[in-house]
Image (tube, rainbow, N blue to C red):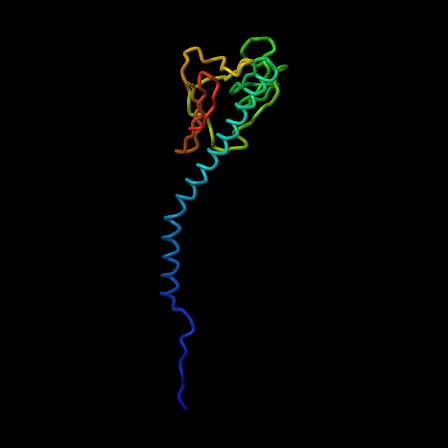
Length: 164
């Protein structure tokens, strides 16, 4: 009677080769994954800010009173990334009693920040939906960034808001 040898298992070399190939694939795909994730977070943050700017504009048109979205404002001891307010005193800035909504943007979208130091500190709209701070009749840009991923919001002199 002959003894048949079966080759049912994998050798150590074969197992190591499979692990090596998986490691190479992971090294190629993980940086792309994190880049895609960062871009997704920046896109979400940009859409949130876009929505809040549009809401500020609509509120100004509907109420007939100037509305402002002001960045880095402290209200009752907490500094918010931005605050939406109704400008009842026509000061073109937000005071604590005029605040309608507050956003701790940096908590919701970790690592996302404004990259435009020269960008507007506030964006306001009058009762016709025109920007308050755009005296030069040029587009204003707000840039959001996380790592190397950047999105820009543009506010036109006629009050249009777009994501670039």
